[in-house]
Image (cartoon, rainbow, N blue to C red):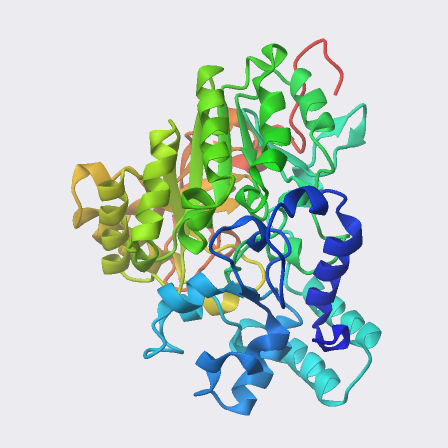
Length: 486
């Protein structure tokens, strides 16, 4: 395949893999990458993973039933939003007899409606007119800026300071939890079209969160003993080989970081490429790493992203979950409510039952964030509440541990607890599960009911002239412990 055939996003990823990651050689341990095998993941799997990107849409035999116009539209959107799928998702998860209406197809493949018409037309015209790559990327990059690449104040408010300088690749929004974005883990085995972290994968360094190494992470943690939880996220930390993952995890076991008691790994690998845990050449090494954390007194939580019940129905996924649990990891699962994918009580009730059967704890049911392809995937808050409540009524208490629907918004995690009527007015009952200003955590408040609102900024405060955070003290950055510089 000629390099000139790649989309702008794919070219950036290839350049990054070839020249930008010194660790790419450490990750590529055994096997030979052929064709478009994944740069990081496939090379260390006994069962080789093959990944496909936007340029290969026309070559996928599964898409022969689609028209040339359909494939052109997919290619246009793949130049704006990241697209990547592997052979496990293609062969084991998607029901091609139901495509394009199959839910796994919908959450994976790009369609025209995912981006605003104006932006779509600009990129489509550029492709049809054969503009050079530099011009195409300039058009696409400008279009992405209109897709709200970093929602909820992630860049403005979440990046912490160390010695009065922003720390790349870290976010510290809630007092007890630090998010870490290892540079080697900023891709996934397959991409979800609705991902709120899509800006990590478009090859734009200005949009990307990436920590070059664990040094600043540990320096920051030594000065912030209020942090009990470290979440390695991305991307997907399990895209890294175990030796590379260990470079980030092992420093957290140091005696002077005893205040860090919980290590979280945010991943979808167990349902997108379960062989990472079951049969990869360093799968056993991953289990030993988890066991080492337990021996050091740390809890390892696998924060599993599960979007549809079918993802948990394969023997490989069940085996992956069982192996991690056998090593002492706790597996929790979460996902947003996504139109075209899981926007029904039946989908969520079935998903929760599968989780309980496998020993997974249902954790959060999120609201789709206002970024990227959200206009295609979002559901109104009122409908999300109905889905969540009806799903909970259909399951036993063991499956009712999920909290939702939850908006992960600028002031914090806002749960829609229900509805009520006050003085004849129908209201949403809201609660801050987590808050940037920790004094507000647990606060109940109200908003006027709406059948169409999809986010907090489309609601109006009720029984109060303002939202709780509008009168709280300003906390745009986490505060260090007393006596220790940032």
